[in-house]
Image 1 (cartoon, rainbow, N blue to C red):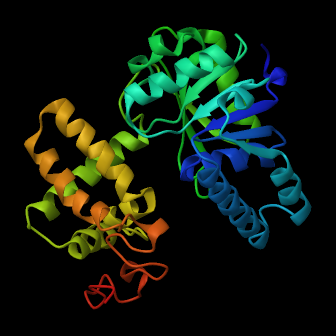
Image 2: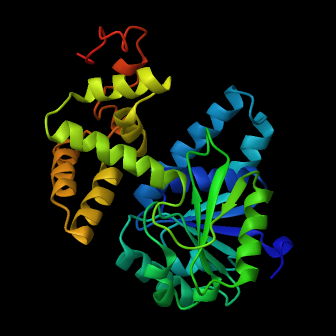
Image 3: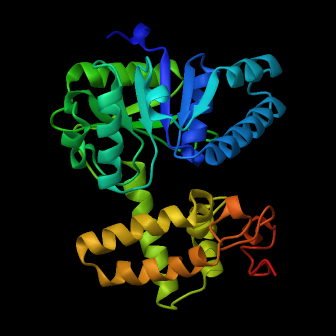
Length: 306
């Protein structure tokens, strides 16, 4: 397969990242199929993609015609066999569970043509955890996106069995959709940026779960010293607290780490209450106008959203 042969993209998992990646591909003139386990999930995802496209038009990133044409290139289906038809590349964004990802890739290995490239958008796992289950380890690597609204950086992480042709094809595809690929030389949990970010989030959660400092003061400290617009807990709200909890809980058990378990428990209370971040309008902060965006937040006068 050559880069010009990649024409049809399958997005597996219609969550926040699947939506972003799917819309990005469609805006770059690729045909896109969105697959998830229910029509309800897919219909809600398509509505959010339409809103994101409108926002891009509003901020003059794309014209109204470009956004409209892109949306016409997107189809949704909860039928795996239909989703797999004539697909050239898969971008998978299902929950951070290596067993689940292995099952998903095994399913599409049976349904897709032999040359289809498999990529995973996993944030913290490595491709080797499910390469064998994929049935085509030479065609599998990680292609990890950040928030595409603010970043063009993508990570490409091969495992030891990934072919050099697959790496070059995925690198070329990333460039064709306007991204800047960083190709890792070997597998590493969390890639480059996420590895640094998770260290920050783990440290912040430990400070809060131990009662050493409040969520607001931890964010205030980071923002005040580093001159950033958001702190670690604001970042977690953006990522989604259910995602941060799943990652924290997974690695707590994997590493038998008591502090990580405490951090996971701290997060779980918010998740159980439905406070999962920006998407639910409340996480550590209330949205759309969180306290950390108030002019006097760092000065200590915007302590809460109450």
